[in-house]
Image (cartoon, rainbow, N blue to C red; front, side, top):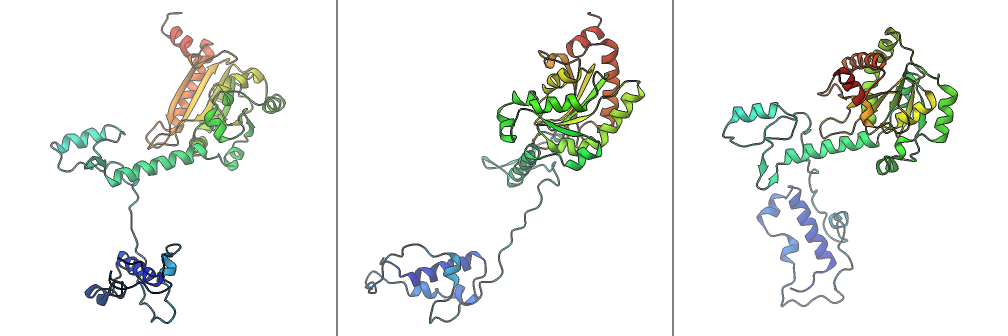
Length: 338
């Protein structure tokens, strides 16, 4: 077939776009388009000066009327594709005609795992894939988000930073998130009360949403509960780019009996605002997770209620102070093996 002229290419592209939009005029549907009927046949010589166009025209240029040509009829309204929010119902089963509908329903209700979602041939169903991508987007917001200053101001928390420079480095260098910057150490030395019974620290961790959504409910319970138990509570503060091990560096400056760290957990595909509370008896250099205790999955989205968790942490701290031990040492003492 001979090469098309630029004008013929524009006309052909415009017809294709019109058909795809679902707005083909009745007369166009019944008869071949003008572009099709005017296409040169192999026996028709190519017009003088016509050649291969340098580049295909844009859709806007294709729809613009050519000089001397009659105006093209409007292409109709822009097509709209409505997609329901996939997160509104997480438990819709996608298996078509299951052998045991009741059993599948009960199994799916017993776990938050993605089971019974069905498939389209060898691939996931559209709704399942949309939900997966939506949940993944929420995890990214949690990881790369920041705790609003208003949340810190509500509880009088000043902020210090670890040796991490930015969020990308935080994800690549967990070791730096366990160490306070020299400026942070100087600030804590200047502003914090020394050697309290309990030091409360708040860290962003891997989910800013965990702190933003839960601190307002758990912190008042912790603060009032510890003081009601007759324990002195140090000056609270916030650590940016914090890892759990920062407890050791914090206590090297403050010297508390117990350090309680509220920190955002790694978000999951479904729950991205879970908070953890780590605690340890006199943490310091060389202390590890074996010397710490943790209450995790603190969230109103399918986890432990923050206020209930706060009350539990208060009772746990009282046990740590009484035993002067935490982690494995506390478990061995409680089991009577030490």
